[in-house]
Length: 363
Image (cartoon, rainbow, N blue to C red; front, side, top):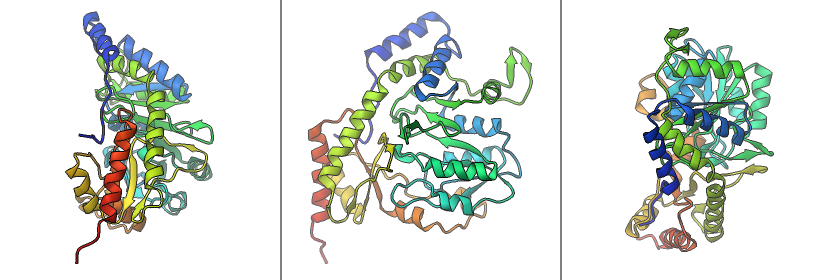
């Protein structure tokens, strides 16, 4: 079996967890503080706030920026649904801007066309580990006085023009088991704004700055020290894992380039893509899936239905026509690229795809 994803948990992570369990300090303690400090330094931010998931990171970030009822936030329709749902959680309205066909990330031109007097923020998603066109998005945000909340949940370590993703605004990361690094579950928010960071810390812990003194409505979105202990070890390894992902991606691209019926991923000029997913567009998707399944090769379709076409949004009156995102949903297929794979594994995956698309179509 060649799985689509494989969390890499070693003896060092296990030992770190046992140390925490033996310490008796399990929630929001020393390990969480250390993980925040080291993660902030790794991404080049002044502050990092650990939370319970990537979803709660987005939720807290929106709340801390004061986004709420009557406001609008522009985001992508082509992402995991949490990117948009968090806008609903705070009582605001998502507005969807179509994506770039080359990179599957939000199109800055489409973003600007969606701005209204109610727009408060732009929430771009660095999908599959590919940075969005943040220079263009940042220019739009500055012209219109909008906040930027970067969904970097799939982009740990990605860079654009020499800058890490997350450095254009408030950024949110996920440590779900399939991500480029994991804490089992968990999330992180980074920001250079210390006042905003303090607000986020209060929101994640029942609105408290001082114990049992509740200054605002807050939530229980804390990270445990068990999770943070795993994260501290993973943080020392993620750069190497990302490099292996890029090598695996290069192997796939070299073998699939020029194959009729397969469009390999493009990397934005000036970007460092971290290949959370290696996503191709294929004309015969069901045939390729059947071939992969027959050889016990994992795959993923991220995402088969754009967010604006999901029932929960259609019931809210969304009827947008976003042709690029809709076309992508019909053709994308993610292939294994994680760092546990060997060169032989990559050849097996590529050969299965090539054989499937070259098989004659029976009339």
